[in-house]
Length: 104
Image (tube, rainbow, N blue to C red; front, side, top):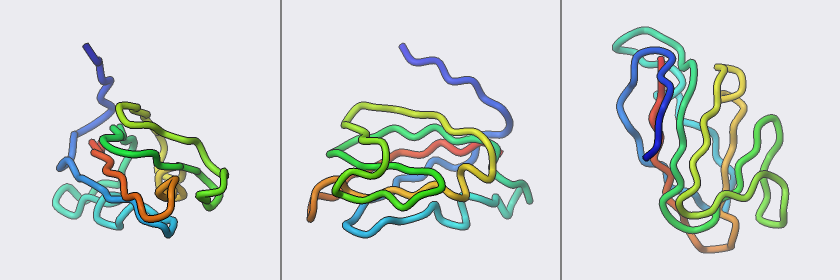
């Protein structure tokens, strides 16, 4: 069983797809326009394939960033951390999926 500590209002769950180019979180995740609230935290659940994640740096397939595997989950807090988060497929041409549960 997994337990999640919620620090606000849970937003719409989103599925992200990694590519061979580092990507940031979408603006729509960082600010919920319906609630007019900035993101406070998010839980990331890695569904498929290896994905590298970094905050304040650009992850690379060659090794920069934390290597997340299928089934891993992480929780990141703080608007600045989430705004500076980037992710990339760990292997060329192998997309991965991430489920995101944002908290506002």
